[in-house]
Amino acid sequence: MPSISDGVMVVVPLVYKLCFKDLHEIKTMKKLLLYLSLSTVLFAGGGAGCGKSGDPQPDNFTSLTGRWEITSAEVYAQDAGQSQPRLLGQFGAGLAYIFYPDGSYDGCILPGSDWDNAGQSGQSGSWNCTTNKPGRWQLNVTKTQGTDIDDGKLTLTAPTLSEPFILEKLYAGTATSGSTKVTVLIGETPVKTDAQGRKSWGEYHFTKK
Image 1 (cartoon, rainbow, N blue to C red):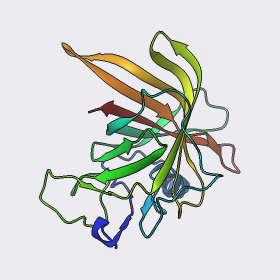
Image 2: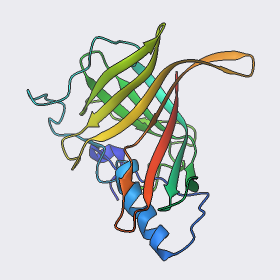
Image 3: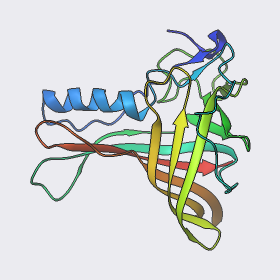
């Protein structure tokens, strides 16, 4: 598997909590993870940072610029005819994005984390990050509450990503963690429905650093 030193970062989270009912759910989980975790390819080098006219561009909101580290991600499924979803998988910290004002971004992996199955080299606790700004990000805001983003959509693309990575129902604003106020980013991937009517999606939680 390539590492970040090869100019390519491949990200597939390692599942530490799974709640499958049958083999079909395992297959559903695997397919969903290909979409959820950008596991095809997140970042690529070799001139990948050169923008094209069709690349997504950021809107006028600047609150997403900076570094965001994931605190948790959950994968859910809801069977046809059921009113409540079930937790399929849960992942911890170890993935980060750095969004720049020009609409580009870098990505980071923490070696040995849930998001590292490529054997990223480096000292434990030290992040491996791209430096060539290979990806593009776009933020579309549909609702605000004061200075917080109360609803919106974040789209990430990369040159070798087969389809955009999208977070909907986006919230970005201040939250309280104990006695400390932090800036959080929370969003859900679009719902996917299989042939049996079973729906699946993921929810991501980030904190701004």
